[in-house]
Image 1: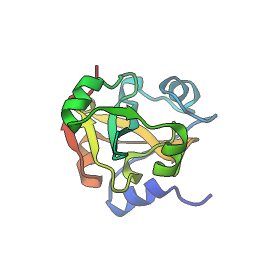
Image 2: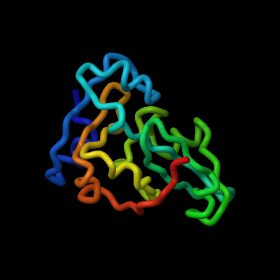
Image 3: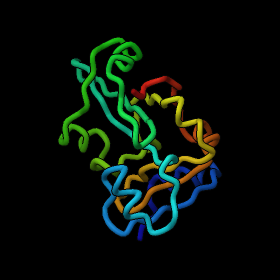
Length: 154
C-alpha cells in the first residue's frame, strides 16, 4: 500500500501519530466509533466540513465529530452567509469523499478550528482514506497546519 499523503506530512513535520484502522468505510462519527479496529475515545473524534459562500469561496471548519456548525456564528466569522458544499463540489475541492476529508490536505482553503477541540489531549480525524483515521496530540495541530481558533459549534 502506498503511504497515505497525510502520513507523509506528519512524518515530514516529525509529529507523532497513531493510525486508526477501520474495518469498513467510515463516513460518519458513528461509523468511526463502530468500525474502529482498536479502542478509540469518541470525544476525541473530529470532522472537517467544507462550506462555500455565494461567490464560491471555500472555507473549512474543524470541529468535534458529534457537534454541528452554528451557521449564525459561521456567518459572523466569514462575514458572509455560507452553505455546506454539495457532493460534486466537495470531491472537486478536496479530491476525496465525505468521511475521509483530512484538514492537513486542504490546500488554499482557510481552516477554522472550533475551540472545543482543545479540550481533549488527543484528537483523531480523517486521513484522506476511508479505511484509516489519524490520531495526534491536540497541541501538535499548530505544528502541521495554519488555522484560526473560533467558536463555531452549536
